[in-house]
Image (tube, rainbow, N blue to C red; front, side):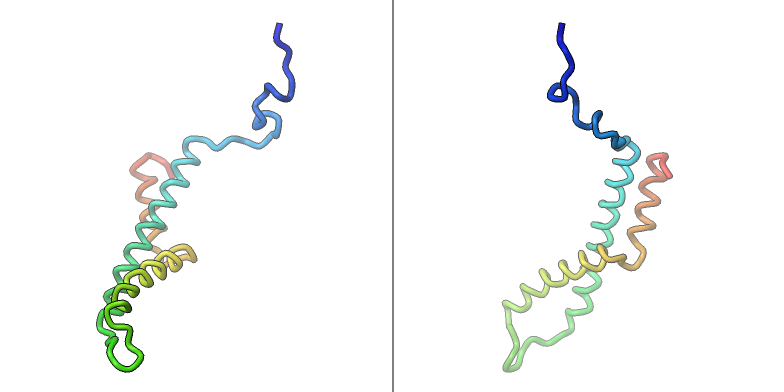
Length: 103
């Protein structure tokens, strides 16, 4: 007969912490997807905003600066979305959860 020991029992059962439900996982994934979507929207908006800036002159970066600008606007969009954004993520997350039958 097998005896139970701490080594054979799942640590999650011993810790007393509740496991995440499928609905919790769906909510987390919806939040992540909505935040990524908002970051993309903000990145495109920032690219349009910076597109009119001139990069010539003694301190202009030329072609390298134009390439870096897209990377910079992408990073700025991610940071803006992570710190609250402009509200797009909340709306998108609600709609994703509504489509899945969750609230």
